[in-house]
Image (tube, helix red, strand yellow):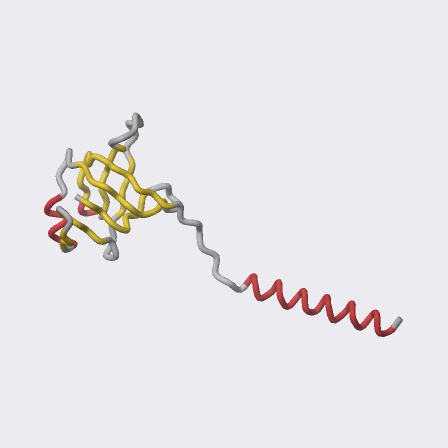
Length: 114
């Protein structure tokens, strides 16, 4: 009887230790990947984003594409710099955006092809 109680206490202690270790791990939101062909509606350099509409679909809603220092840019299959890319963006331009949705349902661009 005493050994059975010891085994049960050891298991409860082990379970408590393992669950407390899981709680200490940082939690990250799941990133839903996107690969969109979009048309630029408005360039908002001051907010580091583009207002776009999906080019291939019938959805006319405006979405935001967020751009940060980690975003890569390609123009005619050649990599371009961050500042050069902002100079190339024009309303009406069709671009391909690869990245993921943020928690605020904006698209965070990892790569933009022009």
